[in-house]
Length: 255
Image (cartoon, rainbow, N blue to C red; front, side, top):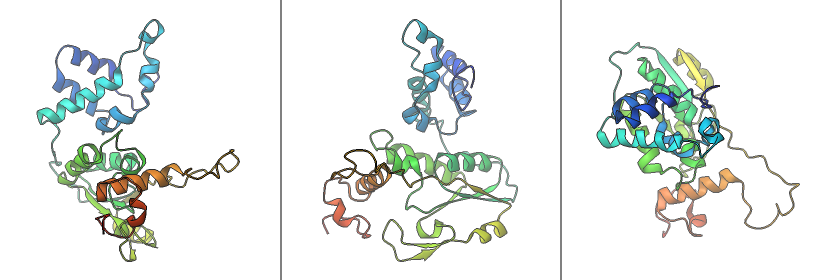
């Protein structure tokens, strides 16, 4: 990290060199050795690596983020990114609460070790911040997020969403389903060898002291992004009409 500027410790000089020599498969293997989801980071990472690139002293830095995305896109194109279940199972059960990038990365690593991993998510879809906190224009939910989640599912990871994935309480789901109950925290502890809490922070920090905060059309980011993205995924529209049906359980905004 102190050399490349990458918090993940990506082997940037190595896969840059491999790409330049046309060794795409080996570059992909190097990339995947340190990064579980380059299809995510290649799209939404702020790229501190490029700020650390010494070429930037005299010229524009190397477009490292673009190279990373090109590698993983090539992997999907060539069929290298496919389900690869572990060759053996340890019999140990792991529960992960939260399906954002942290929870998914932990699930991926633990599953590769052969553990039986279950991911609990209180929302109606897997992905956490990548699903409902990042605009669709930055990371497509079908072609990027759900595509990767489906690979993980085929590798043996179990995903539980909605009310059944809401740990320790009763809550109306985002889909408008009737009230349901997920497992309690004690149940998770009793039924698993380990429990990982990878929950996100969806409650925003309101800035009431900022002039104009009270004006119409000012929204908290997660509230707006969640509603907008859900309307797009459920109904295919993001116009004013989604406010009338979002949360009612209907999948057709014209109803």
